[in-house]
Amino acid sequence: MTERILFVSQTPEFGGAEKHLLDLVRRMDDRLDCRILCLGRDFFSGPLRGRPNVHVDSVPLITASRFLKYWWLFLTRRPSIIVLVKGTFDHHPFAAHLAARLAGSRRLIVIEHLIADAPPAEVEGVGTRAALRRRFGWRAKYMRTMRWQGWLAHATVCVSEAVRRRLVEGYRYPPSRTITIRNGIDRRHYQPKVRISASKTDFGASPVTLVCAARLSPAKRIDVLLDALAMLLTDSVSWRCLILGTGPLEAELRARADQLGLSERVTFLGHVDDVRPRLGEADLFVLSSDKEGLPLALLEAMACGLPVIATDVGGTGEAVVHQGTGLLVERDNRKELAQAIRHLLLDSVARERMGEAARQRIDQEFDIDQAMNRIHSVILA
Image (cartoon, rainbow, N blue to C red; front, side, top):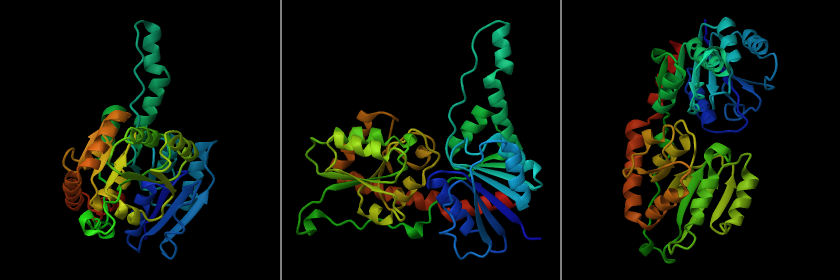
């Protein structure tokens, strides 16, 4: 009997989790019946059009009677395997996990793309009231629910070791069923930039180009990047910054760039279907996030031979080797970020060395075929 795999996606914006799911489904055996259930927006019908074994269905977000609605959605689609794709830790609630286990499927897999927030602090104090709150209060109920999510899944796939460590140590997920399979990149689609020295051109040196590819959402902290760039306006080196992506903060960030006097240096390009031409223009990639799992945008830049400056959050330090393939900085530290950017703006030799090392690291450690083969094995076990 043909396996029917139901992938469940819930996200208001297209990002790394959606790219990952497209790569995963495209590499599935054609004999498998793959179905994508979109709770809300559908980002998959277009890219997957023409694949006879893939069906995409979109339904409204579930906001009430959640267990019964999830259970009915899963039951009527009769999947043998359910895969919950989570762009954030709370994209699919406990009700979805429980409904998936009770809908008759033989296997439940969860893919976690973003590091979870640290668990809420333990209730402090002495006496009976504090003891009861520790045992039966809001935090105790919340932590039990989160822990049960981990135990309900046959396997939780984490895209970085940092994501796994937070779930196992912070939320007490079962270590044997919580595994790390790092994101991978198809190196055939991302080629290093062809470097042309200024002395070989008729027009002199062009500005050093920085690229940031990220959702314009709070977690990406583009405001921190803009503030850091404003500190470089008086430097002698010529530079420009391209920001790829869209999101709820776009208007606010455009206004902030204007207020900081960055309108002639920083360009917001909106959503870009194919980032490769823009990465080909770049000399340096910057990511100023507060939270990450293991960002595909960062791996794509490294695959193009770009040095990376990134905040040391989530799994970024598992890809970026500090002083080797780029520079890691403390999150929400505008001064340190500005200093790191200035250093690589001024040092073309370091940019070249780090960019070559970045490409080699992708070749050696982040092959997409190996990553996808491992996930397929987990899903179909």
